[in-house]
Length: 451
Image (cartoon, rainbow, N blue to C red; front, side):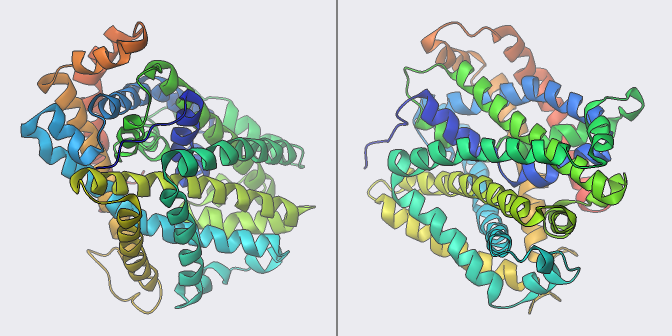
């Protein structure tokens, strides 16, 4: 069995974990939800939830990883043999997400190339995105490029691969985000979007706002995906978990905030103040924003920078998702080497990713309960398994192994200042509200509830 790697220090861990957390959820889901649920009010609710719910769940997962020195596949069983099944359930999440996330990463890579090539006007055409994803060969080529890049990082391991990538891409990502935000704010008509985004209105506070913000935490902070447990298992015993979790939260929330500050005013200025123009998910990223960039002075450069930014965010997240699966294989098959495990996961990802891609083209008539192949995998992983695993993790910690099991790990390096708050959250408040997310996500997925 290979000796378990560790990050070189807290900075390497924080940047890698923040890189995992900062992904497509920040850049296409957060701005859409913020626009839909009252701008400033959604932002305020999200920040409050991030420093409460997000903090508790992140500390829990990092502590479980470091305490057990195992991937989620084996970590839960090490805490309680009767709960080893939760490790298998938690591992299914990245297994389902990895192929389609890399396919979307391929879409981002294609758009980054189109923008860098100076073809922003072509990408702004109504038919461009639909024709691209429905093609048979082109999306698979770009998907292959993206998944190969992800695989190469994993092959280099924790220090030479994940940590080095994060130390380069995360600072670059922040610089590009700030530059784009400042540029967008100087555009005519942008300030209307800024006011909507930053000024809370009590009338916009609703149960849906709360559920949407809480659900976004899972997408945005890589919670309940097994990633933070995996990265926690590489975190040195000499470092302080509570401080590291806070730093990851700041990074993640800052990028989400700046993404909103960049995208919402840009779309407001483009659409004359119509928040519905933001759209959601792929339509925002690949249809609306290219039109916005094409209409801007210097839009070709801005569009290129934006999609490079999105590509950086996507690759750091795909690396973390793949690592969670590879780590599980290495823990389960003691004699397996990293290159073998990595190639197995890459081949699996390519096969399922190609199937997902065909679901928009030659197999577009094939649906699962009305979902396309990609949308079905997304529904099962994000709407069902993420909140389910998060809720069950809280129950395990709160009532089976007890909160002291986590608290003792956190206090290896000093006092856990929010200890009493943590106990109340993990035992009572978090499971109840995560259950609400689970129910609302399923109802939303089947079309009964609209969030």
